[in-house]
Image (cartoon, rainbow, N blue to C red; front, side):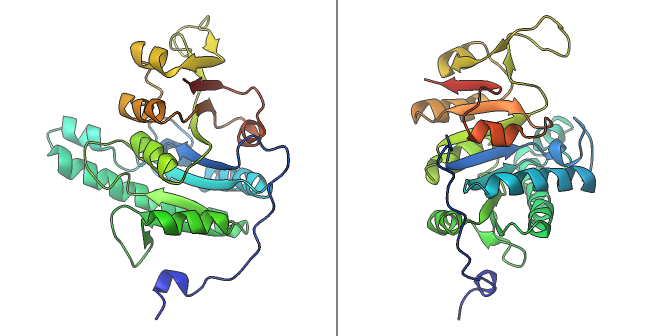
Length: 256
């Protein structure tokens, strides 16, 4: 008998890739806060979820194979729990479960705009999602389904940035897209310094040497060692994901 998560599968031809796409298979890293619309906010705001789903649906129609890794900071952040005295491993597992909640919410929003979606979790919760299996994830992408990777890496002490970099390697993504609250990578904090200058391109070594906080060093080192470029751009600017997949000069490109 087929597993429960496969019994509702229908054969739907995926949209053909647009000939001008710069990236045909991507991993998009979203923060948990992206689902509630505010940095450091709590919960999930349906209007932000709907807007994000609509934009991803437009990109999906161009034939882009989309994998998504979403954080859980809008519900529970492992490092914050550890800093308050909780056991770090226990706290991180709680954070992983928060990413599952966000992933299910995003799946619901995408399916409401007719985008076929699967959630795969690094922590097995078969009643609500598939376990993470690399070859099955690739097959879903090839069939035109968006795959949301939940549960981080499945191990404590690793961030969802690192999970996004790891999944990008495993599915052979063309690039890792890091959607943030600012336009790209700056020489200093643009919220505090109005004259901060944004980099259009940056090497991995400079990113690591300057200790830039857009992504954690483990994720960036993994991308550097496997020659996977990272695109950093502002999520809330309407149409930015589409612009980036078509190779427009949006945000910052980090590479070797």
